Length: 232
Image (cartoon, rainbow, N blue to C red; front, side, top):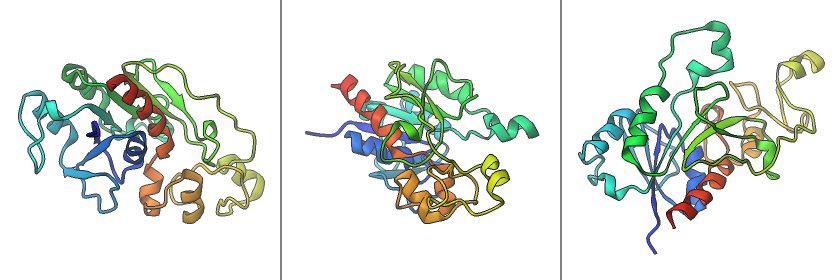
């Protein structure tokens, strides 16, 4: 049986891609930058918004000239800097990719997902956290607007233990966070031990810089299994 094709746009090294693969998709990634560690089945380098617009207009994309009828579902993880907690303080003029993205996905008419940080302008998103998955040791809240809608997460946040972060620095002094010191890590910036970050996220193929931009693939595996049911 041929696997359904997921287009993972703004894919980076493929945190979301791996989850969709585990759910049963054949995943083609798109990113504007080269991604030498991308874990998907195929990769297209290019501007995600422009390529989605080309698909909508009926033009083929990528080396093997994919057209819209080849694609079964689309995921998008547009750059989140504009809506991050840090930018709420600094108020820098980062671009908003979500506003132009949503109408393109709606017009394409395939099942779709937009992933971003809490505070991004998503409509009725479901929020996922690493503590909802028993095999993860990361606290990383991400929101997912989906069509068809998915409203209910697999469980509730369960922040039961200690977690690295600014509050932990104040209590313990500025030490490099590790899984020996904390029950959970936040995996942000450069302030953690890389191998512990990989264990906390369940990701073993990324560099430290790539890991800091990723989300655990267990999130999209959970979403992807529901999309597979929709397509079936």
